[in-house]
Length: 292
Length: 315
Image 1 (tube, chains in turn orange, purple):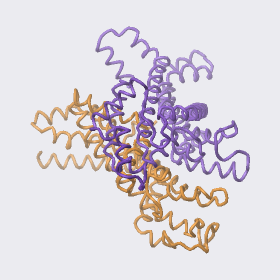
Image 2 (image 1 turned 180 degrees about the vertical axis):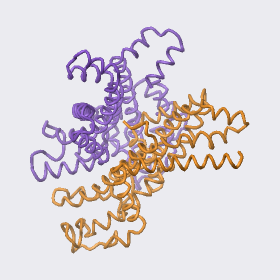
Image 3 (image 1 turned 180 degrees about the horizontal axis):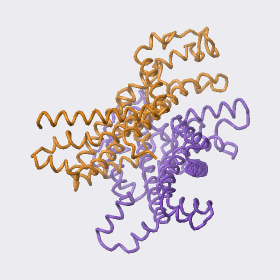
Image 4 (image 1 turned 60 degrees about the vertical axis):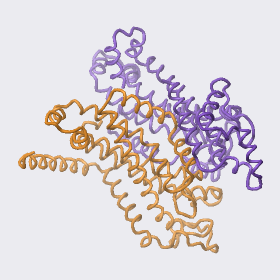
């Protein structure tokens, strides 16, 4: 590629990016979601600055205090400040979401590429495997993986990540099929580009939009399933302030102390909600055709 | 399609649990058991045989006798224990899906016909909240409000119709969010079609246009979503069941995993995969009920090309 061509291409890309940003900025929901995510990220990065107490500061004399200025969200059965625990929980939930999505994204893109690009027998075999995985409910798949590997932070991420692979593989495969027959792929091939180059340089960049949207949305569902797994005791163990396990340990006290379970749950909900808003906004911004 | 998938599922889950760390004999018999006891336990359940032998023997039992193995804990056949719990799960899922379909489709239609109105915005935002809410947390909040504060409904159990309300509402509203979103987008697409304009132009009443012309054509994706959520629920609304202490399949599975009761886990997953494939089959049949184009595909498959085109459309 000559120098001139390269600049032309980057210029066009920049133009597209500007367009996308403009469309995104117009979407109030997406901006709202993004704003809340920024707050979460800040909480995840510097929890010790924001939280007034440590996440495991037990003090039995102040058990089950109702929400007040001292303890915004009240205190739990060990007298720990729930607000501080929720703040510390951001880091865990966000890490979990990001890492598990990275796992599933990478695996899914590889499988989807192979399947969509090479077609025929390979495609058939991979898609049947995907069908098999899809016929096990996600949470059960995750539960069995954790049961087999044992409960740990990494295994939880792996389990949730693997459960999401089929979704990616399908999205990637579908979008590869849609661009595979385009002229520019043929042109690249007639120039003698290798399969690897065609896939990484020409096909994947052109399939990025649905992958980004899928990735955003699946961070949301990863956060949800992680909370669910911790809730049934197969995820992160106390005293780590994971939101799901906070709900699990607070569950015994819901008859008398509503705030023990209300706020961690709200945190989960708001996180997932804002990620979903962001995902919706990204979808509309990246691919205006999809907007209904 | 169904049988290879089931064989695949069984193989995956079997090998996963086979290679899992932790010996069943240690877990079940405890620390007090002697080495001989453990040896006898392994021999009794065939755990000392090589991997493939174990797998083939297991599948033989499943296919020929419907025998999913024996639970380590209760020493009862897994099949019996699952079938004992299954009606409860089935009932819960059926009620929830029924509720979800009613709410989801009606709200979805209202949203689509009045796009960008106040009702539409409210419904879309609420459905977004519904999708984002952890099911089990919603259940707990409902318990706090309706069972603890208002004392209208019992907080747990599944014995009388009064007990059914909270779990069914929890699961139903949660799945209705998905159904509503799908109904809305599918209806929005259909409403812009020419044949809808034609129907209106010939003076058809709005109700008939929406229900007969539009909804019927928008049905395929809606059926897919309903089928998916029904399948997922049958697979054990694991979390909901444990919140409301309902003795269903989901709770059975979770308990089994905690106790490393592997035959139960294995049997449960296989059973759920089986149920889900039946649901998928029913969904496929419903497609042909909803769409004459798909129906005609099966009555006179002309050439391969024709089939491929039709399949592409359906997908």
